[in-house]
Amino acid sequence: MLVKCFLIVSFVLLTIPWNPTIALAAPIIPHPEELVRAVQEIELLDAMRTGLASTLEGSTEEPTKQTMKEVCRPVGMKAMKLSKENGWQVKQIASKYRNPDHAPNNLHDKIALAKFEQDSNLVGLWNREIINQEQGTRYYRRIDVEASCLVCHGLKNRRPQFVQDGYPQDLAYNFKMGDLRGMYAVFIPDDVKKVIQDSVNP
Image 1 (cartoon, one colour):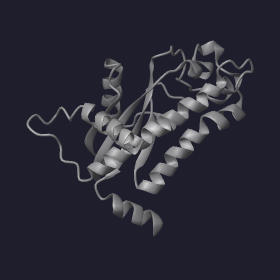
Image 2: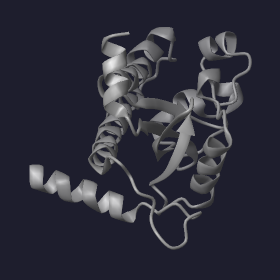
Image 3: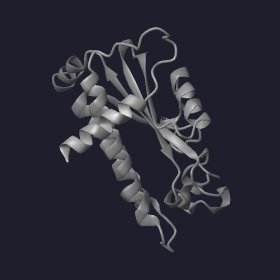
Image 4: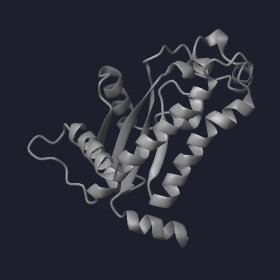
């Protein structure tokens, strides 16, 4: 099982496109093992999202705030836990967002979203970036709309009442199955050990 998992993760890394701005050599990653682990953890996170969302399929009851706490919140909590335990920055980002915290806030975010939008076969990509004056590697992984997502992200006038009332600036609607919903973004600082140490001993 471990061998199979390693082969899958390795294959995913091999199929992720290199930074197109560097023509002659691939960017050097200080901690390639961290990138491999990030890929694996995000696959588990996405599987968790899919599994929780699937509980809405076939339901005749309109989703409520409690539904969101049970289906959506655990994914966000897991992302926060991954950030804290590994010294990473794990976010969910979307152009059509419901939570303003998930809006793209820099050019790198917008470029990555555009690449996923243009190529539906592109699953993940990575780039060397600087965030908050820290150099590091950022991994992006697409999130596609599944049938269960349409319960809350389908037609605008079919959204649950708690969404219409609680998110007046909502943009996350009118999706169809297979559309790009957004992406996960994981920033791995080069000095990741220091980040972990600082979080333990602030």
